[in-house]
Image (cartoon, rainbow, N blue to C red; front, top):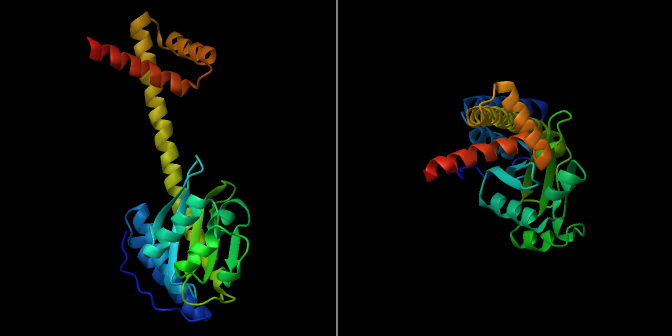
Length: 244
């Protein structure tokens, strides 16, 4: 991940024309990106430059198994603070994923809600923080946008609204990659089942319908998903060929 990011403090407040210009620049940068990581890094950099008062920004992805992974960061501090919260299971980032969708924390050193995280974060220089949940429509939580300030203990009144714009952009980018991943998994599953049906056809001299019915009965009797049964049939056939 690139760390060549300006760290100049943004003004406490900016006008509509300033924000519109920042969004236009962000859009141009994002459209130049070719990968998910580059897109998310562009969004994080744009948020850092445009949301007043924050000098570090990160974007995280929530996996289906509950693991949270930082996918973009504007500097080393983000990696440290993100990892600290996810390892501890404590902090504004964690709370935004499972409780309140937008969390604004001023004067972090006096905050009592996250007793494990706050003392360590203060030692790293953190003074204020915002955490926003990322989601697309009714698809559920897909990640988080995390903004950190080592510059000021207070947060500008218009900062949360500005951050929500970038959260929406990040959610769309993450939602797209998840959609592609699901499609790829569905295709792989279909291919695996097709291969397993072919193996059963050859092994037991069955037609395609009978071979699929055989797999379905095996799935039911073994209390396994059809995909898992297909994987085992294919693996077993590969092992037999290797043992010849």
